[in-house]
Image 1: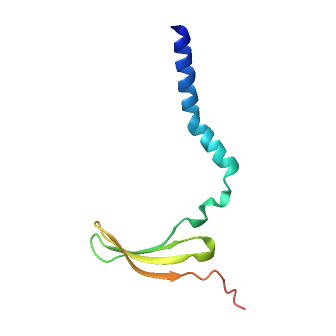
Image 2: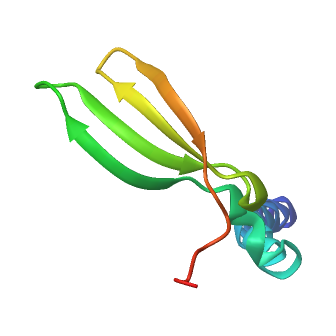
Image 3: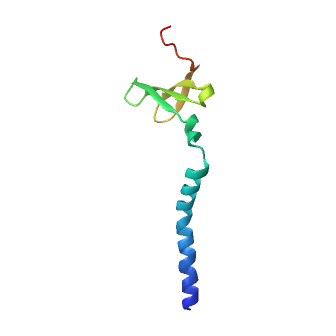
Length: 92
């Protein structure tokens, strides 16, 4: 009986270590630039008690876009989409 209890404790210990091992693996082998396509909040304007016009920047670094969306409690609707220029003007 004690042998099966020992096996059960070992199995539960291994299962408990899986999330920690996955996190360690991700830190070691997944590139740090994996969040390149993350979205970025730009602005929001309230147009009613529960309605907003929101602008967010989305997409990979080489093809970023600004999306202007209308947000209500029931839906989200795309109003416009504009590509973001990756070149910056430094006043020259």
